[in-house]
Length: 144
Image 1 (cartoon, rainbow, N blue to C red):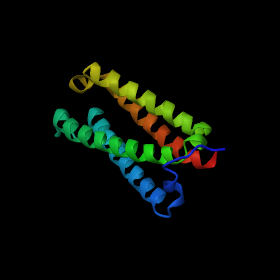
Image 2 (cartoon, rainbow, N blue to C red; image 1 turned 180 degrees about the vertical axis):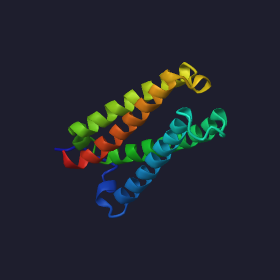
Image 3 (cartoon, rainbow, N blue to C red; image 1 turned 45 degrees about the horizontal axis):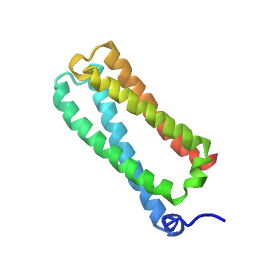
Image 4 (cartoon, rainbow, N blue to C red; image 1 turned 30 degrees about the vertical axis):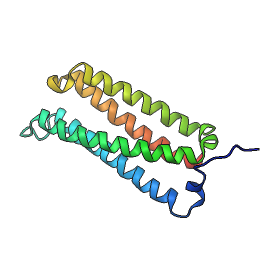
């Protein structure tokens, strides 16, 4: 017998899950798009833009995007937790998100925005690759 799930309506309602997916994708776009823009600047593109000013804007929008993606992702997870916990792609996605969070913490605690050195550039590349992996694993969930 499966336990009662108060979020099951998300899967059964014809609009709920698709609306959550669209909002989830919007959050991912805000997150990754702004991180890539900041990474391009750290790598030397658009030198006329001050890194600190761009970072304030980009990181604010990236955090909002992450918040939207996390909120909608949590609701989608709550609608079918047992199925997702048994899905290897979902577990890979959670692992990659954890690694991305650790990478971001390292980037910011070492003051990478003030330095924009080789380590900062490498951490930005790792960040982008991790988030691309998160997106790939997220899409893979439906096929595993």
